[in-house]
Length: 186
Image: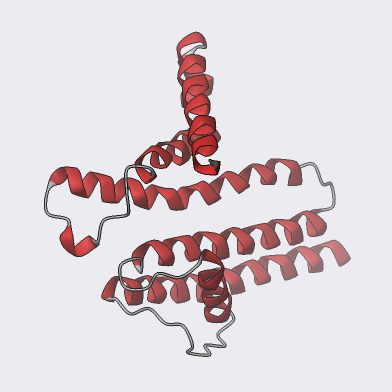
């Protein structure tokens, strides 16, 4: 029953988006980043109720590849959290605003990477989303307990990208924060 309510909510959101795009001038609606994120996050919901996610090894035709790609768009639902950033712009203190932006960015990074690794590892490991969040936190923190690890080649490549992105982005954000704090003290 909960799934039917979710499909009904997504279909009403899609129909309202289509209606709004027809009734308003195209520039504000179609050029908005958040509007495009909304559209791309609703499309995969209809595909999810078609059946189970196809295995990447069994994708042979164009239509199977399209359905597999639409399942991958499920990970973009997390990007809707970026709407919070607009509220952070109202904070006047640059250091306080940047601390909250860094926390938001790290939270989105963890949630997005967990969704991506869950998608990539689906046929090889069927684990809860919360387990993959734990894996990403352990990996990004460079602790690496080894209790959970990617089994597929795609999962290992995704893990390498996650580690590389984390090693570059987190120190960069920390450096930017320190520069803002030093400039505030001077």
